[in-house]
Length: 482
Image 1 (cartoon, helix red, strand yellow):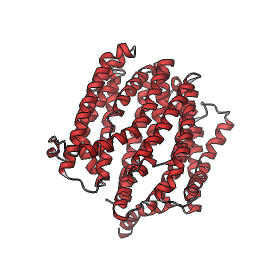
Image 2: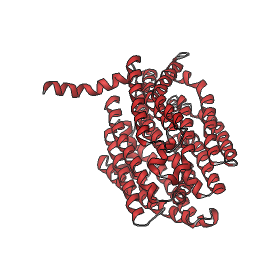
Image 3: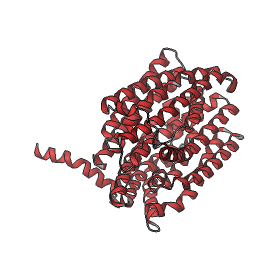
Image 4: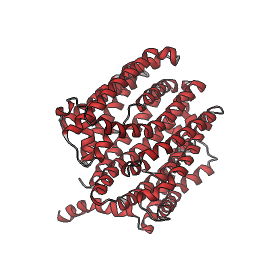
């Protein structure tokens, strides 16, 4: 499948995922309390911290390798299975001891059920990795939409039935089963379930480096959330997680999934030509042109957004949401750094950079927690600035860009962002930054911002217009024949 079709399917799927997640989050916000959401947040933090010691990124290993044999898949599956069993055991054990460790039997109840999710999901590891390597993103996107829909539908139904915080745990189990069954229909490979221990050293070497890179980031974030929940209570953690989840939905649904397609394409180009310069720059221009305006716009309109859609009980999440959006905006200045370091086989260097970033970020977050919930969120901006300044010097060398080439991409994206956000900014200044600004006025500001953004796209003859035209070309041809 071509990159264009892959991205089209991926964004279609992620657009549906975003609508499902966003619409469901509004319903869920009216069904659960901040404390119940905080219980879910604390359990998710514990699970993520345990998971980071086992997340070896073996799917990326399969995507990157020149040749993928059955023997290699068996070895990778064996490593993944052993680590999954250990992870599930630790999660279940954490659930048994949660009353003593966290002072919350509710967190323990959640963990004891959620421990089954990794055991179920390990059977989609190989099919998912092969689909990503072969760029079968149509199928990957459809399964992701199905899994997401089942997850949120189950949460809502179970919450209505009175399961409270446990709605999230049982929904995770059900959606994992659905995803695994779908992948087995797509890629049936029971032959790789045979244990094989040859090649462990190469797999573990790659995996441990990836674990260090991704794990340090998650450890810093999740440990910080546990500190926040311990110091301010589960209700405060629920408010922070509401803001963080909204940020992650935008970041993951628009940026994260698109980069999965781009990573596969860059890996393919690197194998064939030895360079991915053009693909990287074109992708970065498109991503920043779309995501930066969305992030800054939501940062400006966070008050009305939270108040009108989630209700007044969640209003304290508005300022953290603004600050987290700004932090993500800064981080995207070195977007796709993970993919670039992996492809250039410089993961050892990235381990050092991540250790610096994560350590400094955790210290800043804890200092913010000493002051207030908004200051804890503001600490993420400090962490994002550190991320930018330690990664930026390496990007030109790894990508093969000339001096100033990336800066011109940033400047173009900033111009588009300014045009898109200006109407919303003027509205909030006029309303004295009141979260109760009329919803229709906020919607009108967004619409006007989109119009100004589109005008700048046309004036700049942005590459995004070319992509729109190419995607619409088949439809125009069919209409012309009709």
